Each structure stands twice: as C-alpha cells, then as structure tokens.
Image 1 (cartoon, rainbow, N blue to C red):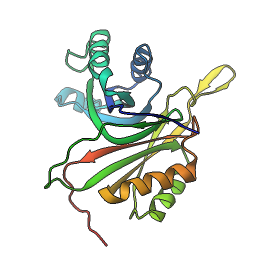
Image 2 (image 1 turned 135 degrees about the vertical axis):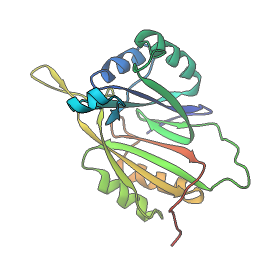
Image 3 (image 1 turned 135 degrees about the horizontal axis):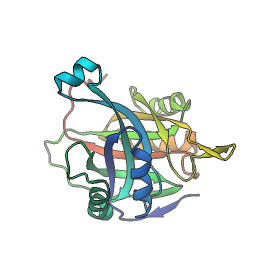
Amino acid sequence: MSMILEDKALSLFCVIVNFGEGSKILKASKELGVTGGTFLLGKGTVKNSILNILGLDEVRKEILLMVIEESLEETLNDHLTKKFHMDKPNHGITFSIPISCLAILNGNEYISKPRMRGADDMQYEAIFTIVDKGLSDDVIEAAQSAGSTGGTVIHGRGAGSHDTAKLFNIEIEPEKDIILILSELEKTAAIVNAIKEKLNIEEPGKGIIFVVDVNRTFGLYRK
C-alpha cells in the first residue's frame, strides 16, 4: 500500500553532461536528498572544423532525469553548478520542468499542487512511465485499455536505491524503458491508474510514473 503525500509540488530535474560524468552528478544530488534517477544516452555536436576532420565532432552525452520536490530546485542547481563548474562553457546544462499531476516514487504516491490552465490551453498531458526493460509492452497495453492511442519507448539506465544488483561485488545497474504517452486531459487519470494496477508500480522498485503539462501539440489527431 502506498503512502500519499499531499500538496508536494514536484519537478523533473534534468542534467546533460559528458559521458562518464552522470554518476558523479547523481552522487552529488543524493547528498541533498535525491533518491535516484534515470540515465539516457545522447550525443552533442561540436562546431569545430579541426575536430570534424579528426572525426571527433560528436561527443557522447548522458542525460540524467531526477524527480525532486520543487523546493529543492534552487539548492540542487546551486550545489551542482558550484561543484561541477556548470557556469563555465561545456561543463554541463541543467533545467527543470514542473510535474503537473502526480508521481509514484519509491512506493509513495505524491499529489502535486494543481496548476491553473487557461481556457485556450491545449488539453493534453505527457505521461512518463519508467520501468525495467522489457515491460514497455505491458505499459502500452494498460494505457490502451484506458483510451490511449499509443506511446513512444525510450531506453535508459536506472540509478536508484532499488535498481542495483551485485555481481562479484560490482554494482550492475539494469536497463530501463521510458514510455512517453501523450494523453487527452480527461483520459490521463484513467491511463495512469491502469498502468499502476497492471505493473504494481505502487510497490518500491517497480517503477515511476509522472505527468507534465503540454503547452502545444502538432500531429495528434483524435480517432
């Protein structure tokens, strides 16, 4: 059974750094109370003709996603900026996105403070579900049973307190599936509840769900 924490405004805190630096960022974040995160792999491009000739113009990047309480944003940003010199060029980027609805995090159910929408706002939300690799089909199936028309699967790597196993005393972090579903506002709650029930996400270590507002959409059509 999950514990409900009322009126907690939450944010998705994102950090983009060179490959190999992400674990250091996560460790520093945990010093301030962050419980875990999910890594995505990416690449950056360097506009430099010499590097281009040498074939070194693409730089591997790590994108670290962490769900945090909104009140921690400024402190975490200041801490990471100071510790990793992010105020200097090419040392990394941080940004945060408000989570609009709710999140399942470490077995606890958080209810975020509601955010006002104007009458002309697009009535869509983005549902993110992070689960162990191989469970994305179950997430999509549950979402479709509640009215979703589909989703996009992104592959990442877990880095939370429930995500590590040991092999010869070496920590092995399992791969994760991140499923992004764009939902009509009135269907969001049903889709989230269907995923929660099918994947048992309320149990610690089973996964995370969070929802963010979408301001504009193109290419989405109602059937």
